[in-house]
Length: 396
Image: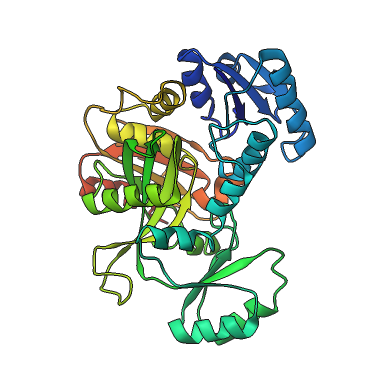
């Protein structure tokens, strides 16, 4: 099996996808924008060959890289980046090289549109907040009057929380309508709820080989806008309600042979038209692995190796390694350079070093969403989890 992996060197743990594929016998061919001599040794060892391009944004260069691999190794069986930023390009490359093991451009465009998603949710009977495209000003004003302020706006196709914000009143709405947005936006009914996600590695039938639940701050967009500290966690198990709606969403969207990350609201109060307290409401579907170090957090939480489970799905169609050992909460707690904290790094490590699984500096391009310095730990109880976050993020 010939697999092309886009950007195996960034984020810095993504070589694990390639390493597990290669251990399963695949020929793994990397395309990236870091010169070969600057690659980490782990990245080099995970690949059979690497093709450097000066910019992954330049489709012609990336096309030529895949064409070179196709000429040298034969038909490409799989192409993937597992990275939100490159999903559209991945899909275009699949179309151009007749790679049928993943979504083409038309399917990917449907999955990535926050407006087009609504019909897919509806087909699966999955409740979602009301939404309108930010196009005709009168239609947008009427929508806001109907659902009431606040409302929420975000790019129709976006990566992370970029461009997303709460619109609190008519004045803010008029500012939005007068702005040169530069890309299509949607306006959505605001839902006061907890934010959760369902992650799964699904097989060729869309059935889960592995599942996980993560929980996040109520508004990631506000966390970024206000430069708040970031804390989120993976859970030791999956709420049966979330498992049911996550599986239903996977089927409704027709997702097969992928790692998926789906975001849901969990209602904190009854909301007419959406559900009762504790019910889940569809927010958006991301047809890729969760970002940042979340795959590693899932591994720590469930004593498994999702990189290996995904590689088994790619190369074998199934896996025998989804059952792990003990389960935990795995917590990500970060700090920002713009704040001063009560406890030093040495004090954090002195108190929590035995449960810290990973610690380091977040890549600059990801730091708006995820903070600058991070600490990742696992605990058995929610109380221990919360005490850890409080200690790490207590400000002076």
